[in-house]
Image 1 (cartoon, rainbow, N blue to C red):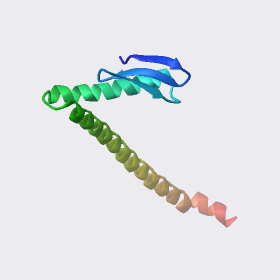
Image 2: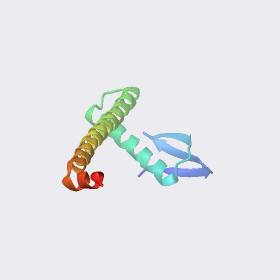
Image 3: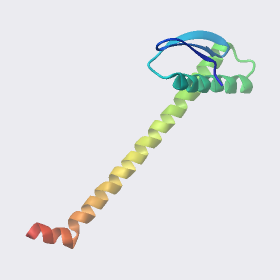
Length: 107
């Protein structure tokens, strides 16, 4: 669990990959803690898989892993949204073609 220390309204002191830093944010302490945990986990993953990688390269690789996950989620969301849109349009077409709907239009 990340060490997140609130300093004042919207300012937190955190430790990421062993480095202390201050963050100014509108997020809650819980959200900041979750974000710091996520970044720390990715850095740890990279450093465990590639212990000889420089610290700076570990940070870049961790950022790429997070970006890859975010892009994958975004693409999956878009695909799901497009599928839902297609299903919705099909249902609307079926409703418009139904005899009951046609009868109500004739009135």
